[in-house]
Image 1 (cartoon, rainbow, N blue to C red):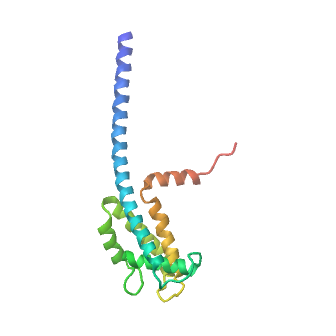
Image 2 (image 1 turned 30 degrees about the vertical axis):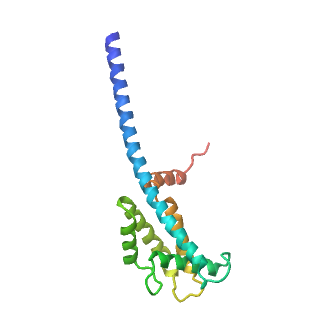
Image 3 (image 1 turned 90 degrees about the horizontal axis):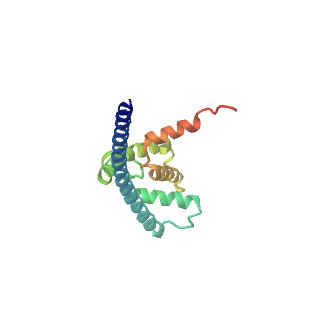
Length: 172
């Protein structure tokens, strides 16, 4: 009887160790994907920052960054420098796809495209190239900024956390 229990216990230990090792391998793969995603995300943010500095030094945009019109026009300038705007100041999916294909790889391409298309769908109607205050560009820019900040997060994990937060709480 003791030998049978020992064998069962030994088998359980082997199974647990094997499963644990597989989990570690999966975590390492996910960590590598996250590192790569984060590297590409940082590269995009550095590009945006450089273009913001350029646009901030542009003498055609006068005023304080605290002024909403200046912020909107700074966003418009950055989007133009990034190549997201066409010659008329409009955001086009074709330009966005080309930029994403040149700057991102793999799953991140899909995430960037989804983000840009979502922001365009949600705020694209606010972008009016003839608006001197450039208000729609600021709203669109904030949408992109928020999305880029979270772009490397696991969408399945985010959905699970959101569902958990929205789940009804049992009363005590």
